Amino acid sequence: MIILAATPIGNLGDASPRLVAALEAATVIASEDTRTTQRLLQALGIENRPRLLALHDHNEKERADSVVELAAEGDVLVLSDAGMPTVSDPGFALVAAAATAGVTVTAIPGPSAVITALAVSGLPTDRFTFEGFLPRKGGDRRGALAAVASEPRTMVFFESPSRLAETLRDMGVAFGAGRRAAACRELTKMYEEVRRGTLDELAAWAAEGVRGEICVVVEGAAPLRLSLADGVSQVRELVASGARLKAAAAEVASQTGLSSRELYQGALAARGERG
Image (cartoon, rainbow, N blue to C red; front, side):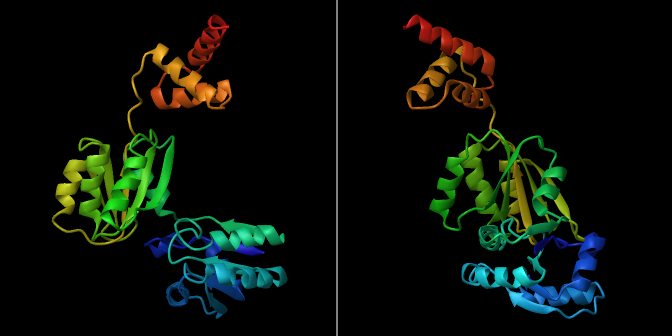
């Protein structure tokens, strides 16, 4: 089988007993960077020396089938440099190829920068979306932010320290300078820091220069405040474009804060009035 194993995102003490046991028993490890894996083995005091295969963004599609063939004969442990493989890291193409070939895929859960940042952010955690890294080019980045400006769920982003200040300024333009956010730096490491404030405040802080690995957590957009009549009109427009009434009512409710039941009943009534 293929075993996706989460590795520490900073603190080595977060290596789980299952991870250590898997590293001690592994015969083949496919990793994002074999040098990082060698350092991890050494740091954890593991004497096992498995076969190491590089599996990264530039070769994963070409190498996925051969790794799946190895997994059909014996277990292959898959590691990224930190955290869980496939989450903004290599592994997705491999898992897809394994699923197609009928090879079992399992996981050894563990540290995740996304969940850790969300947990310590002080922002709502009941619903969230992970947006990964934004585009590097300013115009593309601003376009990507504009596309999620009305997203009601808490959003988690990765960003490099060199682009953090610029990204926070762009977020302030796209989302509003007063939108609440948290910049989480060097999570689980010695110099861990969580800065909370508005996007405007965080952009001013980051302008002084920031180092380390960064997660940015941003509050979701406030629901649109529409009248029930306007909400019903939106539901009817969605239905006219092919959506089912119940699904349309649920979608408008999630975007506006209006009652899904009232939207549904209102749209039914309007349908009856108009024959």
